[in-house]
Image (cartoon, rainbow, N blue to C red; front, side, top):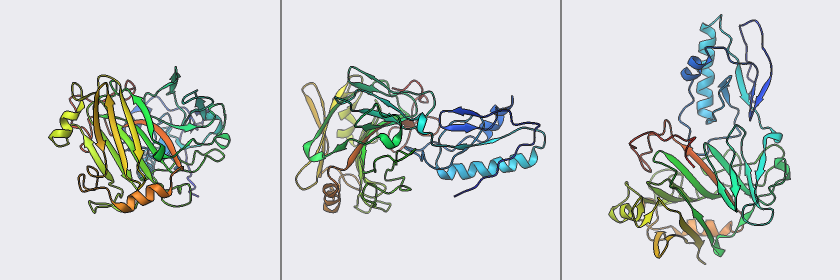
Length: 359
């Protein structure tokens, strides 16, 4: 347990104020904006820890990775040591059971989504369609009426039966990323969604092992990538490691992949399109994109690999099959840094992405 002593050098600590998932120990002073920008959190990474103790200046509600949190600790202490007349109070991250909310119905019956986090961003479900905006992450749950995490249970998927959905990315510009993916995370417990993914292994997976991740899409209207992560490691070593077995459509792909996806392309991202994903009997994943009479076989055992095109390894197929029926479905939206794009996906962009307007 990390104990953090926060101290103030002003005359008073005004009040407690709960804002979403961040408990503020005091109102920020008038000049808080300058200090907040000085301690601006490191570029938000995809699905950064929503469980790690978070440090922020009062009034700042941004989530960050643990490394960014510790950098902010050091910066804040240096500033406080120099400032004997200003009132700065460190806030810490809290998991509020009451802040958890469900939305639905989505997927039929009582099925819906549960929102990870507080703040002002709320998903919407209209006519069975889910819409998310801003910096958001939600999980598909069996009963969206549940009011606390320990009452929730995730919907589990067997990919051998196939998964079909329609997605509209026309309002997700370059620099922002909309994600639909599976992870083998445990059901929630008291005050905790027990989220994990392959880059966030602080919480073990469903059976206590590595948290597998199958990214059906990380995409916007410019580019789309699908990636599978099944074992630890980095580099282009032929395994589905942290770098993943991947196929990329868009400006950074080869010629065939560049013309297959984007506005005015084979899959025209100014319009909705269908996604079908499945595993065959051997565990090889396939992802098809469909729009009208046009179909693009985006991801298969031949196209995928690490590096792409090297083939999907048999070891990864076995790992996917071993956890069939265990996959929980996650939807999220995020951006990297200031929204000018990501070299691994779509950047550089003509203008920065406004995450609040992306949907």
